[in-house]
Length: 367
Ligand SMILES: *Cc1c(COP(=O)(O)O)cnc(C)c1O
Image (cartoon, rainbow, N blue to C red):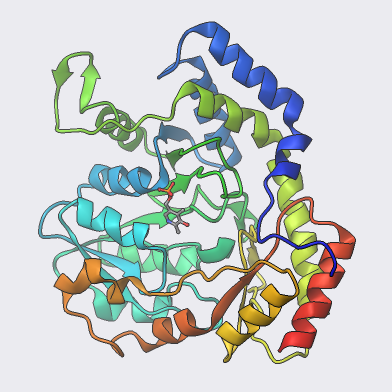
């Protein structure tokens, strides 16, 4: 059998920036300063700029970015936040952490993203925020979502955890909502050497609030205005991210080229392939196909040494953690069908041409 194709290999990304990353690690070690320092400030500036936004606050992880972003927008106990019915559970957990209720809205079955046509029916007097997710790195239809929000006096916070360097109508994702929340988890398209996250915003007041919330609710040491948490992007992670950032556009273009090869090579076989609206330039965090016999397909590919994953096997409303909301099987049929049928194929910068060809051949032979 040919060499296995892992679902994800992060080593090529390290090798391509190794000199700068190693220098960054040594610089921080030698500085003796590990939190809330120059490295963080430099990365925050660079990331806000990259996103076409004005401000960034580095945080400890993506879940905190969603949570503190919602808190800065004023979400509290008793409020409702509109979330996609198909997303990673972190999107919902952030709402719960504010004491608010996640109100699921079904996705568009072609794009897998929040279906704007279904949002208004879910708005109530308690709704404060619409929280779209750019799932798999495919931008959500932000102009339509922002227009609905402004008609109803709501705020928009977008979950950008899978969408680094994605573009919507030429504009970068991360500068399109009131607040954008990021994860820099190692496997994300811009990944740290551990956990990391952050928010971007054009609003100086909002970034200030998040910076207070991330540091125990304190602007001045030992003076606490609000009950904050401890959620800081440390200097090592900030330095690693800043060292990797200059390669992000090239890495994203490589993902786009691999995705184009897969779309072309898999055309015409018995699979639902990712749909890309004409206004979208996806980040291709994941290349997700849909197949009626998903588990069989996954097993056959595993037999060929090809790693795949399922994003995600159980929708949030069917998780025991959300039993309290009282949703039953069948309440969100579009999301439930997706969770039964989706499969993520390997796609990462550094994948070789023979690996891409073998992947295409193996999938064609397995459907
Ligand atoms: C990864 C991810 C998160 C959470 O990020 P962490 O850094 O792991 O906390 C949130 N939402 C989505 C869509 C994600 O993919």
